[in-house]
Picture 1 (tube, rainbow, N blue to C red):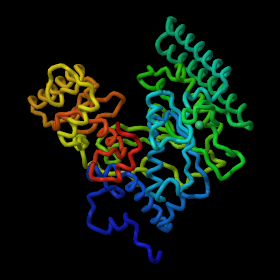
Picture 2: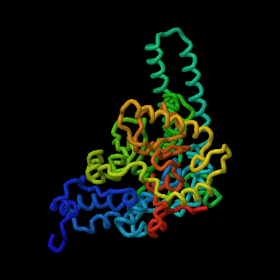
Picture 3: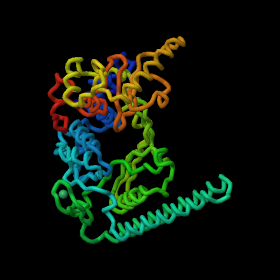
Length: 454
Ligand SMILES: [Zn+2]
């Protein structure tokens, strides 16, 4: 193509800098927050390599279609935030694209309130996903799970061998899944064709339609669904009860809704196998090892993928070497960290000084255990770097100490043994890829952070 410069990847390969993985650019934590530039850089390179003009990505994003994005189990609106930033990197602003954030669903009030206050809040915010089906059907679904759970209890009390019990339990599980999906699919199908079902919306304080207008007639609109399904019953937390669990009703309603209405479903769920792609933050240059499974399903009569999304394609486009560690996310200077923690942490009175002052007794005890464990490893002659630890978890949970960030869970208390202090909430946001205004020398990051600071 005359007049077009070579793709940046080709330019990179042309130079002698081979230490970087192609498509990577993450040198330090401040770079990490600029992930949309790196992610779209990889896509841009791929498009150029395939012979498309440099404007290809922006044109593709702008498209002719209105893309009504809805998310479930929405949390803080992470998907919307990511989509907005990707759109901005490709087309200048999400307003220049066909993407409209139609709805989110979240049943936790505190999280929902946060979403409502965010500048990235979608047009409608609904509550519990089970409101999407008729209450009589919902009652039948709950009844079905209850009956089959009872059978599972009775089975456990029989004199069958563990192997036999496992087979029988498997059969009950399949039966429960089939019954729930059958009921939910019927309920969703019964609603199709008529006016959209309405549910209580927390943005407008009234009943609002679950579906965007004119979706069936307007072939140029698409309805992708993003976010995870409820997977608690498939996790160790749910004791692997799978479909024989109260939350299976929610899972079935969600699946039936997606099957009945959505053109594309993107979800993260670690406990479903199949066509999922596994990606860990460390593959993207983030010092955290937490492989997650992602899947993308599309309705064939509406969409066709140009290429299938695989882990290797994803890594080729966005992969990066690991160049920073967990300690690098403790960005605040000592004074600023004290000021922030003083303002946001309840004063804890147990005679501790310095940053330990902000820790609960439980966290203090676990910190002492981690410190003992670390000293013991040194005494044994092992080469261990000062680690980053999660004080909400016992040392036994994380038997290997490392400089990687622990998995960020609700209630995590991340402590750096190098900086000897806890990670502040703003730094935690930053570690999760939000442009939290921690890097005080860059106004662009301030503008991107969607939450009010109080
Ligand atoms: Zn509404």
